[in-house]
Image 1 (tube, rainbow, N blue to C red):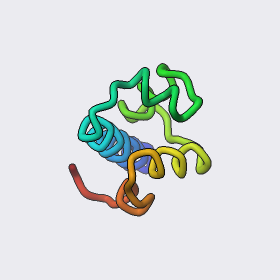
Image 2 (image 1 turned 180 degrees about the horizontal axis):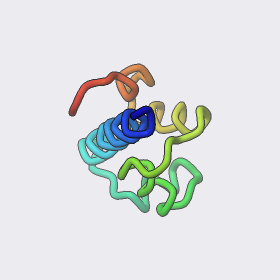
Image 3 (image 1 turned 60 degrees about the vertical axis):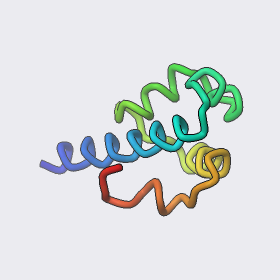
Image 4 (image 1 turned 90 degrees about the horizontal axis):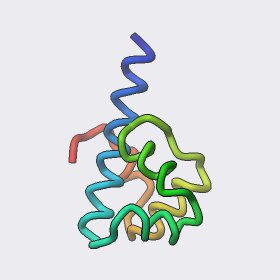
Length: 77
């Protein structure tokens, strides 16, 4: 049950990151380069397969121009 809840939260965070990245008009490869992470890692984050580390999450929020809290809200995009 806890694993299912965590997976849901990961997917929601990833979906929000994808949503704001697409609003910015940046593709995954470009955005990953801006963050100094691999596009594969970004893809896993956006698909809810990985949760970003705090430094990466802070960088993502900064690059997207949104608050970290916005990415972590337990709401759908």
